[in-house]
Length: 113
Length: 113
Image 1 (cartoon, helix red, strand yellow):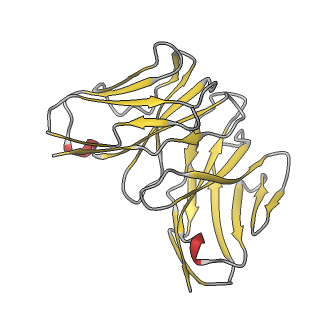
Image 2 (cartoon, rainbow over the protein chains, first blue to last red):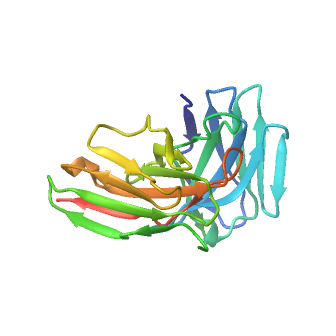
C-alpha cells in the first residue's frame, strides 16, 4: 500500500514569515494530493489540493507544489498569521482505483505573534 | 445534510463493552470512509464503502471491528470487547466517489476505561 511521510513534525515561525511542509509518497500511481488543516478538537478541513497533471497550484497565501518524478509534494504558506497555527496533514490517493486516502503523520505549525 | 454528521461526539465505555458509532454522510455522497486518529497522529484508514458494500476493509485492526452501511447512506462502526488501546477519535468522511475530495465529520471521541 501507499506510505506517506511528512516533515517536519513541528514548525514554529514568526508572524509574517513563510512556512513549508514537505511530504513524500511511495506509490507512483497516486494522482491526487490534498492538504488538510486541523485545529484542536476539530475536524480536518481541506485547504488546498493538487492533481498529478499539474506541478503547482496557488490559492492566496497558500500554494502546493508536486514533483512526480521524485514523488514529493510541499505546502507553502506565505505571510503567516497566528490563525494559521494548527496541525496540517498531507494525503495521497489513487483516484482511478481504490479511492483510499493515506495520510501523513501531521505537522504542528505555531505562528508566533 | 450540510456536512458529515457523527454520533455520539463523546463516548466513555468500560473495557470489554460493545460500542456503536454512527455516521451520516453528506447527502448524495456514494463513498464513505472510517478513519481512526490517535493523539499526535494522522488519520489511519480503517474501511471504505462504495454504496452498500465494503470496497476495502484492509485497515480494520482485527475481527473485533466491523462496519455496515445497509442502505448506502448511514454507516455504523461496531467495536466488540473494547480494549483500552481502542481509545481514539473515530473520524468518518464521505465523497462522491473516486477522484473527489473527502469531507470529514467532527469525529467520535472514544475512551475505554
